[in-house]
Image (cartoon, rainbow over all chains, first blue to last red; front, side):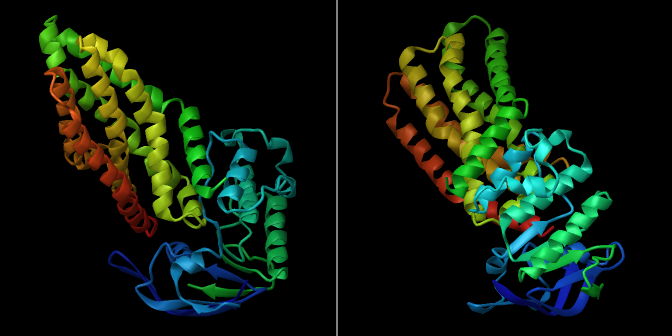
Length: 200
Length: 222
């Protein structure tokens, strides 16, 4: 389990553009951090940097856990549950096939009750191409839960969701933090968790 | 089941359900093999002489039709991000995708080849060598193709650039594969050509997952 994630003087450069620089923050187990900022401020870039997809031009990301301290991106990646702005779903696969695939890929037992949790139990045998944008987002949430990772990186987690879906996301984030997990979410909407926020 | 096998099975399932990239490749292969005898004419000797080269080139071009989607689909819908964070290393992810492509495209092309060899009046021993050469060589097409597919991942119309990148790299496979068929046709031993083809395929399958994974990593960084 991760006890904290600390960023020290991160610099992000995309092409010729300096997206952000000197960015430092810390988040500990049980906390949520909302990353806020205008379009193009670098919210997604920051999440991709934490995930290890994008290397910082300067600065460090340090994860502390029971095993010690590490700034290795690959090691950090093994703790990350990812919900990007794309849902990562295949139109040809059914809802249950999709969920089972990701659960098995992450070496976790397939837990069909997750579909009930996100309100997709009735659609379990429906190919994903027939799902609405909100339902696809709910399935992506089920996939996130199936990955059972302590550090959640969420890019616009409320996007495409109706009010009950947004409540569900907030509830899942609260549960995750309550269980000692960490949530970092790039969002334009308040998380509603009494969380810290980081303005880019 | 291991994560490798799980990804492999998913990709085969996707290939089977996505309206037939394999069927498209097989149709293309069959159409080219049918059209060439119509164009060349009824000179059976000439047809058998060109059979190895034509069928090998047709097989490579047919396999190319679905190669650009090797990583593209997962990249465009965000699956690749989730897969990259799974316990499966990207190198094994690339290998699983190469294997899935070969099983859904290269292998069916190989199995169809003896039937198409009939159109070229290829004798049975040469047909057998054509079959063996495709069996041994088509994994190299998928493997080298994976490098091209990963390099063109974030390019718009990358599928058009892909052949320009990988066709030159595949020339050894075509030379040794078609060469083995020619040797069999001349009743000479094709083992050396097949051995070189096998060595090329082995090296391609062994090395390309590393190259493809490195390229995918760069593309994930955007």
